[in-house]
Image (tube, rainbow, N blue to C red; front, side, top):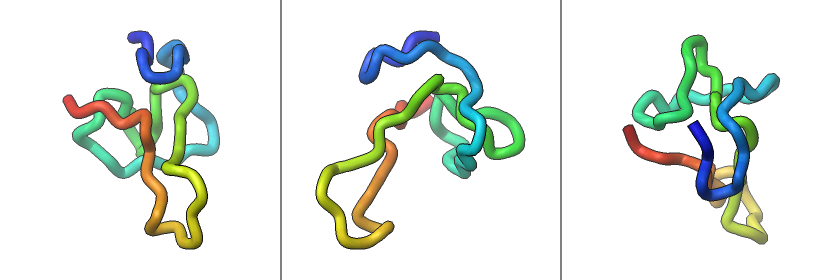
Length: 58
């Protein structure tokens, strides 16, 4: 599965914990198979201001 938003191939990303089970890249045990992710939108002042721009609904 190719991630068309950022050109990354589908492979599990080490060190990412994802709890969004309705994303096509969600993997067992809170993994992410997007290959790489984009987090944004840019400048933020709190964690709640960010989101995973790579998200794609199942």
